[in-house]
Image 1 (cartoon, rainbow, N blue to C red):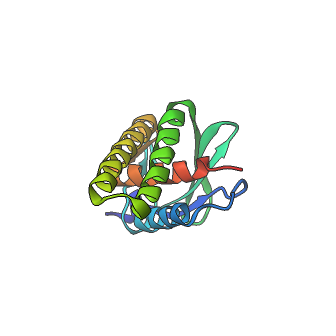
Image 2 (image 1 turned 90 degrees about the horizontal axis):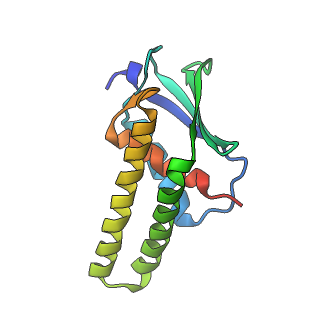
Length: 157
């Protein structure tokens, strides 16, 4: 992994943060940690990184504010949220079921719910990767972690 093709820092817009459940907060922290530890992200048409990414939801769009390591703005682009709405809603509902199941369900029930959760997560990260293909190159793990953060941003008051 080259410093020129990676996200070095990431910030989430916390303006509309609600009190997140401990599980959601844990998922956010793990996604950020894993993303910063190992990612592949490269702007189509340059310039090279390392990058600082500010991720937010603005006017019903997913905003990517990409900056140089010194925080100088490089590129800003928006993605419509409509392709993500149903998958995020389903994913968050299954996650809620999963967290409840951990407390009361059998291992086989938990495993079945977790398989559904992972499948929805894969679908969401595939959508994100597809929507970004003309703007940024990223690997599957980076897309998965960014999708987790997109889901966290959807949890609003």
